Image: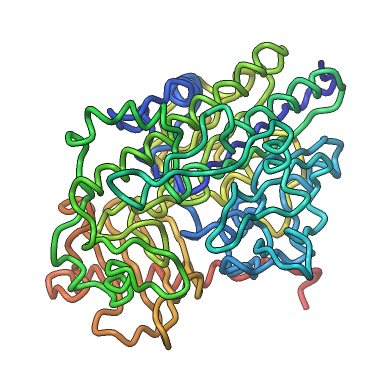
Length: 493
């Protein structure tokens, strides 16, 4: 048992999980009792937004508390600069033992014979069990570097990684049995860390970075089978035919499956049955995630560490899942792409059953966790601590007037085109600006009171002209405020 009174931190991050994929967020189809209970006994945030709709910029952002443009990591395939300070590094410097299980993705992570699996800065992780994702990836045999712990775990069990194509759609794969899944490996390895650290005096931070429910959609058969008899009852994606005609051109390219530089799913080529099967497969992956997270939480209870452990559950970004005629991710800022689940649970230090409607950003996590453990504020952090709104010292609505997210060339779209897109979302409106876009429509404007599904673009609606100008003014202000606060000013001149 730790003799240091500072709390442990179990920081769980799912990959590509949208906000409405848990029972506690109102999803009646999934089975997520462990995460639902974690929220009911802790603090649930209804409107948490990522700062980028793709992996690496978002992960670097929430681990530093800084915006993607500030960290200089604006797209997948870039690597975090060595002078950036992430939360595990800060805590390791103050005596924490910091571990990581699963994906890291703070640097370029594509297999090449002339470089390591994923170059690392001094990130503070002294205990590492790394696996970017399960194999295979694209046309390559595997993400199979010698340091891929999941692949080595399968080998030790005598298990060969394989998937079987679903009989009704090639966009769904039947994955390994639950006991051999990447998510199961993550949970088993995390449980070992929790059990070992119970015997040491120093506090710890463990990042558990699951790959689920990231595509390809490949749940174990036993979990997908739960949806077989109800698949035709599942809702179709939120898509109004023709809605993309009034939106930036690159959304139509994505819709048609010609999104350059990324594998996408051509929405028009799929039947209603296929759309529902893909949704069922995605939710089955959520069910798997919940079951395995339950194992880690049980280990905290069993080892007597639950009371003084901060558990964070979040995702790095969402999944469009066919909404607006789009799948997966890209330079798109609909709520399913940038709004994610966020739960904080700490029996010794957080209220139970608190549901917060404030607009919050994931950059707010870094200052919140640093404050919780008594670490000195970092001068480069741009997020705002969530403690005032958690403790009720300020009303929910006063934490932020709006949330900001950005995509600077973070995904290929079409030959000769680049997507530089920024978003501002207030409680009632959302504006998305496609900077330098050559198409007829240069942005999106949504009235979230009358159109919560974001189907009707008011960008060119004269009745919304004044609102558009006010939202553009907000956008300029927020972009200006992402300027790096470093280096610290030393004097008046």
